[in-house]
Structure formats: C-alpha cells, structure tokens
View 1 (cartoon, rainbow, N blue to C red):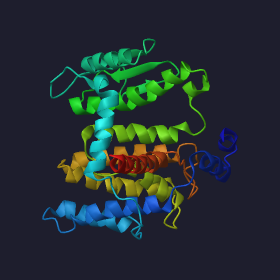
View 2: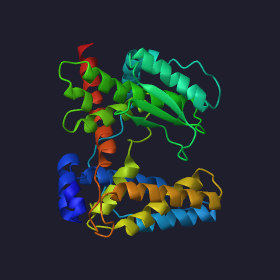
View 3: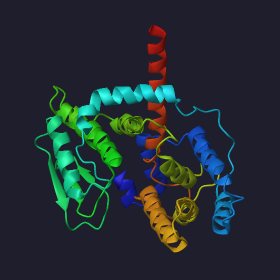
View 4: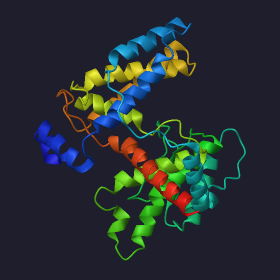
Length: 317
C-alpha cells in the first residue's frame, strides 16, 4: 500500500485498502443518503429563508438513492437490554464524582486515571497537553498515553462516553491481550478494528439509553460519495463541496449564526475530506481511503447481533 502511494498508483492503493477495510455496502450508503435526505426535507418549507435555501441546496447536491430493504434502528427494548449489560460490565468504570455542568481538563484527567486504575492499566499515563491547538483527546497505544488538551471541557455524559469507548473498550482490549498467552491479541488480530469500533460505539449509545441513528454516517457519506457508490465517482473538491453544504445545514439547524456556521462548516468539511482522501493524489475520482465505513457498518452489525441475542434471551425466559 505504501509503495502504491509512493508510486502514485492510485488504483493499486485503493485495491489494498478495499482488501483490508472492504468496499462500502450500497445498502448502507443508500440508507445513509436516504436518512439524511429525509431529515433535510423537513426544513424545505422552513420560515427561516436561510435554512430553507441551505436545505434545498443540500438536497440538490446529494444523490438520489432508493430506500434499501435494510435493518431498522434497534427498538427501545433492545437498547434497554444493551444498556443493562453495559452498566453491568462497565458501571464501576464510569462512577464519575463530578456534578459540574462542564468538566475541565484536570477533572477529565482524574476520571481517566481512576478508570485506568480500575482495569489495572497502571502503566498507562494521562497528560495535560498545554501546547495542542486541537480540542480532541488523543490515545496513543504504543506509548500508552492519553493526552488531554488543556482547553478541553466536556459534560458528565460525554466524559462517560469517552471512558467506555477509549478505556473500557480499546485500552482494555490492549492490556487484556498483552496479558494473555497469545500476545498478538495486544496489537489486535487481522481486521480487529472492524468489530471493536462497533462495540465501542454501541456502548456509547447504550450508555445514553437511546439510538437516534447509527454511528459514523458522516464517514460513510464522504467515502460513498468519493468512491461513487451512486454511480458518480468524485474527487476531493467534489466531495468537499457536498460535505460543506451538509455541515452548513447541520450548523444552522443547531441555531448557530450564519458566519460562525459557515466557518465551522468549512473547517469540518475540510477535515472530513482530508481524512477521506489521505494517501491519495486527491485528483482521481473514485479513489479514497475506505477505512471510515467501518464505524457505521459495524455499529449496524453489532446492534443486529444484540437484537438476536436479546430475542433468544426473551424466548428462553
């Protein structure tokens, strides 16, 4: 794959990535587009003319897909079943003492330290990053560190989500693997990310006890647009322009001022498109990095597994 990048052989690069992360499912892409279109259509007749126009611009830019025969969102009974199991497995991990509406970086660090101690990850370190211009918390499994930007603050609910995702799933898998007789489990077996990300995102949703939509649809949308799952392969610029319209609409509906909404939309669209096309020449339509499809694909897959388990348990009881 790296040699293909160095040789600027974009089609060979894509072939390697599709081998590792697979091709997007046309059903999942159709579901993603139809779900977004359905939401946007509600604002076509908005009294706010800016939102009205933005909604119509986005609908014109998005492809038209047939509604797939596809897995429905998990019902509340299934979500409650997953919530109960998640609390049973990880409840003590998210026993967060802070009641503040906003939890600062120092408090986040304390909560992470407590969670790491709980799973016996005593060799892991949490650091306050005073120099980072980024707001995201980063986990480095090789160095066994979690960096928290000094300016970062979160709600208690968001902090619980971060803990079950990063520490309760990713870090726990790493240390349990390293302590097993098969040390390779610490690094992860072939394609381990696929199932692990599905479990991590499911746990976040289960903790919140609701599923408004499957996770990862923005990544699925960008990759599907780039590869041309709808029959029209696109390059970096074409995907960026659609994603900018998507984020602008999203920001305006969230009641942001237009200038702020536009700036944030441009930044979000740029970051998402760079992530989607990294490793490519950005100019070859239909060639992008397919990794980000795993988040929605496996979130859907894990919920389907839980649905079957919950149904079997209901039959047995």
